Length: 565
Image (cartoon, rainbow, N blue to C red):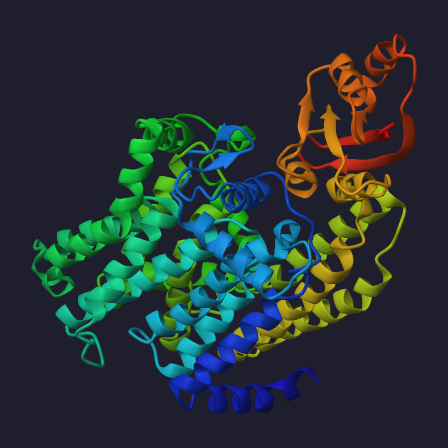
């Protein structure tokens, strides 16, 4: 039965790659199938996602679309682009009548969904400079299937959009380079320079200098090989830099004036250079960690990408391979050297890895008989098996539950993954890669709507916010003692007060109006001692138990209220 997939794969591939329009429609539908499960039901993921979403929400509340703030704290880490896009998505949701739009995290995720889908489509476009339409289509499908892009599509932050900007700029740069080296099968569009600089300008507003860093390193490597920068002439650096200034400079000037230059001191001096100097926010990792991450984050194609490395080394001087190496290696080495390690940093390099893998397949560069090749291919099975075990262990340990609805899909994932290995053993490398796509889709269905959704212990903030809404008044004032994750601010409101002691929480509850206090168990005695001097005691609404991934601690949070009167 496993072998019967081949004719179906061939029919789908041939039909979808018959025209660029069909290819784009196919990849669009595939992206939605890959990214939408769990998109609207997954709780805000601490800590970065709710920080971005809350800052965007405060822009809507204040009408100030220049400064970036989280409650009363300046959030001068990233440029404004993502906040504008999230604010626009929420505003559109309000216009369309979405209830409580400003606390619906899925609205803030829409720019990430668009960015991830654009990254898939732009991977197809970029790979057309290297490969035939059917293989470029496969490249786009592999990007849609990559675990890391699927994660970023569901998180309201910058990285999916950044990946789209990076692949657009590098696709334009590839056309310029391959045309110069006479390795391009078509004449680049004269507007290619607009794609390059437009993507760079948007990238600057999304995440600062990351996109220019990626193409800057590539340009240095490629120009060194030619001992000349003349090949860059079609990119029109003069008008292009002017375009970047027109797009990005107004906001950078406005924020500099508004903050007196503190934005640049914090974003460059503390955020960017701080990551270079030391691991920030407990995200330190040794060099080489991204290689370890890679086999999970680029699953299911990662094992085959590793097999393409010998091919890339042997043919490293060929223009196509040299370009892809220049895209991948310098930036990867920089990310490995920086102490702060987060898996999404290397996402802009994945389209190049995809292209290199497919060139190896096309040119016989994948050697099934090389020592360890079949064992490496078995990672396609081992990675989801490990993930399944981790999720089942987490469900049982935290909630004494089994995600029964996920189990049939997990079984199908294993069958699909085994079919990938079988196709590889039969030397059907392209068929093996196409089989990776349904394996990834099945894993997506198993994990996001079912396995993760059943982890009730991880939903501390949503459950606390729901408890606050249940006290019987429309808009209670809320304070929290101990537990203070950003998701709680996003879900309960910008005015959420942070107590430093039990006395602060008790005094807050003693003020007029409808009030709610969240008290973490480790502060319970302090809180009770502060209440002892008050004539009336607050009512205990409920006690919520859960697990905080940030810090890895079991928590117990009591919810108290005092109604007006």
